[in-house]
Amino acid sequence: MTDNILNIDRLSKDRGRTRVLHDVSLSVKAGERVALLGHNGAGKSTLIKTVLGLTPISDGAVAIAGHKPGSSAARAATAFLPEAVSFHPALSGREQLALFARLSGVKADIAGIMERVGLADALDRRIGTYSKGMRQRLGLAQVLLGKPKLALLDEPTSGLDPISRQDLYAIIDELAQDGCAVLIASHALTEVEARTDRIAILRKGHLVADDSLAGLSAQAGLRTRLRMRASEGKADQLAAQTGGLRINGASVEIEIETPDKMDALRRIATLGDVVVDVDIAPPKLEDLYRHFAQEGAQ
Ligand SMILES: Nc1ncnc2c1ncn2[C@@H]1O[C@H](COP(=O)(O)OP(=O)(O)OP(=O)(O)O)[C@@H](O)[C@H]1O
Image (cartoon, rainbow, N blue to C red; front, top):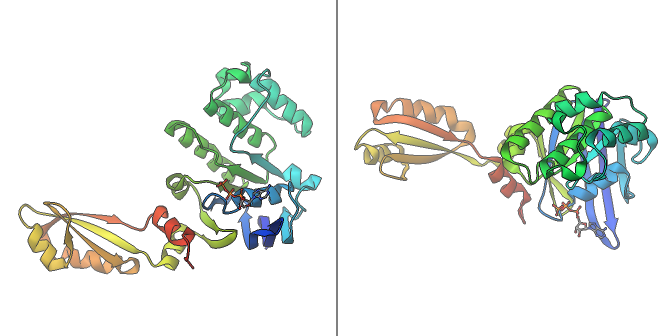
């Protein structure tokens, strides 16, 4: 496919006698944000290292904008934000970014980029005085600097406070809107659920899922829960009428096949004022992740 920026085709990787990636195929298009999930040791970092050209491939192929990992064209197209970013503590943010810009031969509006990542006030402060969140933001500034076609982000929000996390995802969204293909390795399911277009799950080096949240829900066949609040004193009647389970004094819960949701809501609507409210809880990424990433899952 021509609009794939990252193309991983039947990639296998051996570490000594152990195969740690098995026949993995995964692509990311321009403007797409893809989450890469998996338990510890599932192979996420190894996959990222192969894309960066830091470790050789045992079988299959990887291409970045059509180029081989590690080639100068691939390196120019790729930006990487490691989980633990480290910079020279004696340099200021401005000096560090200027150094990166010089090394990668790009002309950049450093003050503008620092402003965009919320570090305008720290432009001329030594990085040694930055907090973890500020260093993470500087890491993101470095990603923005090269106007990459592909951004690989490893646990980009680890250790950040909730507002910094939101800010960071807002910048990632902008990167994608500018046409960058973004691959985010993460354990933070709730965030990636809301902020990515597609979810890829590795289990013991096998890619066991690769779809949108809705697509994964359909594949997994997980059920949706409907929680109905009964009018005063009518919870038993509601439980009897719907075959649901009373979960507290006022509410009744039923589980339905997800595609039957609208039918169920229409039936509930016929119950009149016995029901005063309905909450719908579709399967969450956490449920889907458990389904796909656990031992014995298909
Ligand atoms: N340098 C190495 N030498 C030998 N084995 C390695 C090396 N690096 C990783 N492995 C093995 O490869 C497998 C995949 O590890 P990897 O670090 O890619 O997992 P991960 O999904 O990134 O895990 P985590 O979420 O803990 O970061 C593991 O079994 C790990 O022990």
